[in-house]
Amino acid sequence: MSEVYEANTIARVLLTVAALGFSALPMYADFNKTHATNPLWTGHARFHVVWQVLSYAGVGTLSLYLIWTNGPAYLSQLRLACILPAVVYGAFFTTYFSMRLFGGRAHDDNGYLPIPVRLFGARLSLDLNFTVFGVLVLLLIVAIASIRVPVAG
Image (cartoon, rainbow, N blue to C red):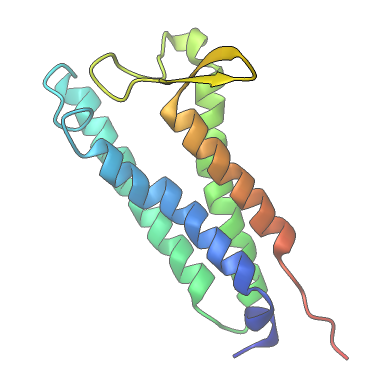
């Protein structure tokens, strides 16, 4: 095994969680009556959600390959494995914060509803996607910061 591969175990584990968060998690969350088979959604909307989820599953599989396959260009693989989830999560948050421009909503009333919580006495409504993806972005940032390049000695 290469020295770069061995030095980045923590980054590999964290990047794996980040990759599974945008690939496997949506398969679980969206291939059901709340999204892909929701009779209240138009057929075209269901088509797009299935396409999106399967695309993310493919990108996630590629990410896992890059993370866990050692080779002479491993550091470059690891960097690409950081970029892929950053693109997916970046697109999510860009969409989330621009919903007013296209009349979007973060949730449907017949899907996953926001979670009511109290934080420091304030009542908040946490959107599940925003909350989970926010945590995953923080893990991604920690993963990126934990990447080690061994110094040749």
